[in-house]
Length: 205
Image (cartoon, rainbow, N blue to C red; front, top):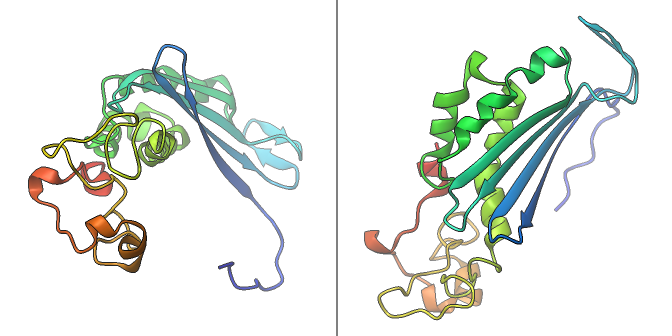
């Protein structure tokens, strides 16, 4: 369903966030996020005029994760920024993401490590999209979206759990019509505490 038609207006600013996931030959995964800010006109910054067509921000964050969603490497880059090298001075701070797990209090830990002057406001904002982007990347490749097991592995009764996406949004609630139609085996189920997978929103802040 599209948005309602807008009133007459002018574009004044465009922010784009792009996230891509790559499976590496060594079995790890790279998640790359890029944030760009652009204005459809020349912009007067404290450091001078940024001509129309050049971004105010082009900021990159790459994390490398294992199949348990633990970060084993991290790198940040500031290709375009209002204060050039001064903004880029905080890029090494994002190495502190190494060792964090995307499903275990990730956003809370990011805030603890990188809030305020410890990092770049906008690169830190990119961290917020990493958990759900990684989950989407793993769906169907690393995780079986039909039976909840790692792809290519059969479940045993002790491991038999609902697919990870169920019970995490309104459309996929256990008592809803989508689960009744597409996942009837799990319709009406209330997972036991021992069955529950890490809650993305609750555990990542």
